[in-house]
Amino acid sequence: MKQLRIPAVYMRGGTSKGVFFLAEDLPPDPAQRERLLLRVIGSPDRYGKQTDGMGGATSSTSKIVILSKSDRPDCDVDYLFGQVAIDAPVIDWSGNCGNLTTAVGPFAIDAGILSAPADGTAVVRIWQANIKKRSISHVPMKDGAVQELGDFELDGVTFPAAEVKLEFLDPAADDGDGEDAGGAMFPTGRRIDMLDVPGLGTVEATLINAGNPTIFVDAARLGLSGTELQKDINGNAKILAMAEAVRAHGAVAMGLVKTPEEATAKRQHTPKLAFVSKPAGYTASDGKMVTPEAIDLLARIFSMGVLHHAMTGTGAVALAAAAAIPGTIVSRIAPAGADGRVRFGHPSGVLSVGAEAREEAGQWAVKKVMMSRSARRLMEGWVRVPAI
Image (tube, rainbow, N blue to C red):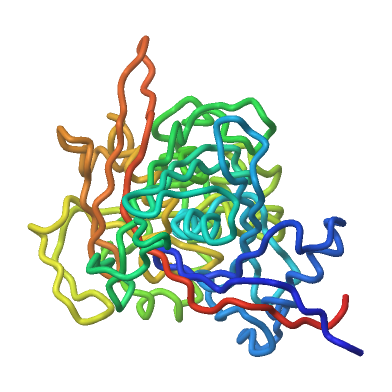
């Protein structure tokens, strides 16, 4: 009846939080490991609270990260991400968490996975094992330690911290490593598709593989304005069901599942559904006013069946890629500027993200997406969990 004692670190990365592990500290058997991780987070919880675990009962705080030293010559650390369902015994390993990518470099340095300069910037090369993509993290160092405190402010996070600059490399390139390795940027070969969604009719959508598989639709087609906050969406069962229907049919069109029912039951983390619209003023969730002049477009994204409180990191990657490529729903509203950057308003405020894109032989390629986030260790030591 004794509990297991497993080394772990509880970290914030961007606007998400998760429990971080070294792979060597977890069971090698995947089934046993998954049962243990579910218990760590406190899922499934029929009350929807994750009271008896480390999860925070939201899609942004019900997350697992597993890291190990990379065998790849072009990477320092392998990063595996698990999105844990709250009320079901499911960990979705199909996609990345862009926000928690911010915490990978600091964790890897503290864990001794790689060496870092005493002062200046440590460059951490990350292999994202879920989607088989590379990213680069620029981690500030001071006096031989990761610099976590600073004056960088990120909308959606209350307190300032040190800035971590991220580069997501070739986010839509086909690595040829499996069916979920990324594939073509536009899996259907089109920049706008027509989804036939029962009860809603034909819906225009941009289906893009960048960061994570993502579906972009016009807010007005869902009967929304684009200025909505969580309180406007997450208590409305009709809107949530409509959004899930669009997401599930988009997943089929992208070739990720065979039926919409499979998307809802087994693939909740990806693809993401986002809706966009022209700039408009609104009051963010912290009471701050966002003016139309401060943004190029409005963007909202659903995560694990509900509206996200800010913007997923991979959603920002997908949005930057879509803005940089003519003919998408995003670029139709707000084409990226000359510097490749686009500013968008989300429920918690404003985020700027940039993409390096170019046309090659009639095809557009996104070579890099850049953004800044922050990360901080919240607790370190051991998690306790009943033996599984």
